[in-house]
Structure formats: C-alpha cells, structure tokens
Image 1 (cartoon, helix red, strand yellow):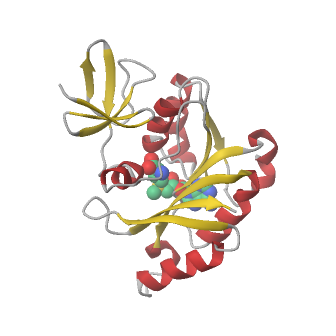
Image 2: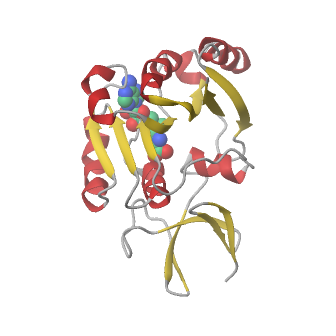
Length: 219
Ligand SMILES: C[S@@+](CC[C@H](N)C(=O)[O-])C[C@H]1O[C@@H](n2cnc3c(N)ncnc32)[C@H](O)[C@@H]1O
C-alpha cells in the first residue's frame, strides 16, 4: 500500500485520507481500519467530516499537529474530533464543547477511550463556564449549526493564543435560510475581521454543499 504524508499526523493510504489510530482496533463511526507495516490507520471520510473535506479540497493551512491544544466547538458525536485526537496524540488535548445531551452521550463513549479528549456539555456562548479549564489554546475548530456563529467565535477567541489558528465551517442555512449564502458568508467574515485575518476559503463541494470552510489567524 502507498503511504503519502499530507502533514504531521495526516496521511493518504492508497489515495484515501487517514490518521494513525490512537486507540488500535477501536472505531468511532464505522470507519475502515487499515494495517500497514504494523501501523493502524483510520480512514477519514470527507463526506462525514468537513475538515477531511477541506483537506481533500487542498487546504494548505494545516496547523494541527502533535501536542496541539485545540478548543473544538460543536463536537457532536466525535467524528472529526476523534481524528484530531489521533493527530495531536497523547501529549495534545481537545476540549470538546457540545450543547446537545443526546450527542454528548455518544461523545462520552469516545472520550472514555481517548484520554486527550475532554468532553464539556455546554453552550459555546457561555465561555465563563469552561474558559478557566481551557486556558489558552493553539487552535479553535468551530462547526456549530447556530445563527450567531460569528459571535460564538469572537467570544471563544479570548482563549486562542495570538497568532493561533481558527477553522470554521460557516453554515449559511443556520444563519439565514432566506438569503444568498455568499452574502451571509461575507457578513460573517466582516464581523470577525477585527480579530482575524482570513488565510483560506474553501468550497467543500462535492462533499458538502452547505458550508464555506475558512482558515483564520488571530491578529
Ligand atoms: C454539524 S454538527 C458538528 C459535527 C462535528 N463537528 C463533526 O464533524 O464531527 C454541529 C453541532 O454543533 C452543536 N451546537 C450547536 N450550537 C451549539 C452551541 N451553541 N454550543 C455548543 N454546541 C453547539 C450541535 O448540537 C451539533 O452537535
């Protein structure tokens, strides 16, 4: 099998995106486990994860790496955060903020096996309830289906180091279904422009039609 390194901890195994399984023989969402020369990879499905879609679409700003501290807003059941857990490894950490109890039940099962994932059942608007625990992080990853996605990012950016990176899947449908998505994306970017520089913008089709994926750097 052909292994191609995309960046620290991210690979293509025979052309398919994958990370090295931090918890060998255990799956999170039915992904395929692939053994190559004693290393077990987990295939990373771009139809299930917007970060995998962005990387498949050529994202060049990939700054998540071993030992990174990541604040993940909207962790749902742990699909993407589990791959970030593979990437940051045992010495990294992912604070997984999720508002829905139902998703949290599944997320907890993932976090029980992965000591670098810390679950927080909370609204990402209420940073005062977790900011002390989180401290300062290298990266914010945000994928919340909410109307005020810009405000949520701005509030949480207090926990991001200066020069740190933020990745956001902006969902226009959650902000305003009735308006042209391009206008909704522009308003989001205008709103956060005081705090962030935009490094990259990616359309995620054919993997996802509903989002603009952006890589940002804190000023
Ligand atoms: C599209 S899903 C995230 C999928 C996940 N990022 C992945 O790739 O595995 C959006 C999640 O954001 C959560 N969410 C929405 N508003 C939130 C808020 N204010 N605070 C925390 N989580 C929120 C939803 O409950 C949902 O689980």
